[in-house]
Length: 450
Image (tube, rainbow, N blue to C red; front, side, top):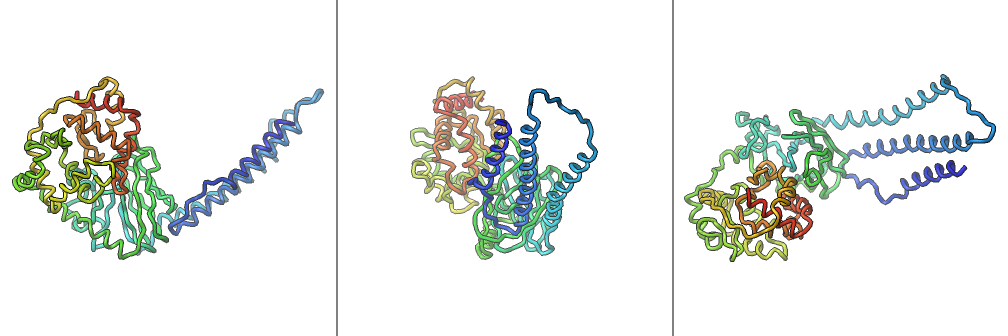
């Protein structure tokens, strides 16, 4: 009797929790309200089965409880009962799956007039490609992917020349427009998902998948990876902003086409040498850094990272936090570089400077640091040389006092808090693995041994 009562109480409590739970579906922001309807239908069918099975279980426990003198009756087969159970189960499964299959057929069949957006997934970032004036995306191939062609666009395909490249995890979409998403992965299995749109789709290396949606309300929505794709899977986040057409056009206009990127020069070191005169006052004429002036070593750092940090300082993504005193000092200095060409020139000159080994100033337990660094290897490499495809800069042979400070800044939210600093936000999450100052010192001391 008591066990039967417990089963009933648990069943009632579970059903009540479903209806009274504070966790609800996010407000929908696309045309796929039918997704919610299929979810509701699934809850209805499985809920009815759940209630009936538990009531039957409670009845059976009570009806056939042990009583003195009663003997159990063993019946190995009951074709009538098996027929009913098979039929009812079939009806329930069809009721759940058939509507979903109908919705799926529409989900992967975009209108002919839908605009096209390509989402590219890689450990552990999103980037996007938009068709140019011809309305078509150019051919691409993972074999062509590299630091100068991160999307792997075929330079011999004329349709790809006007493709617009968005090399960051934030995508903007115009309001009330049909949009077809074309999905590619360049490394491992990912899944592109935006909960408010009720959309998700696997991204399988070597294949192209797609879906479509219609944006129905303005707002900013999280883009998530919902397939376990590696150590920083949890930090693979982006943003989709839905806005009016005028704002969208202004956003899209700021990004270069593939042809423009291909025409850009790598930078003129001779011109950059004159520009570097401003930097030399703090960072040294050889880019060796100066701790007394809180200026880190620049020589030997990866060029793409230096260029990105200078852009971040110029555009306020770094150096704007109230506690980032040294970042605030650097921000106005970066403004002396008038445009992107100037940034490339000064970075090109820094690349000519001899990479000198700095002295160790931070001391910890390098053996313990080696173990802690295992979680960093996937992005920064076993030798700490940095990996451009994971947006991870070089760590080895750089100033240990600067690395120590930046790790602490990431932990304290001094860096990585700006809403546009996606890479800083990832690092801020990863830095939490270093539980205290000793752990930071241990890792930094180990990096000095590389």
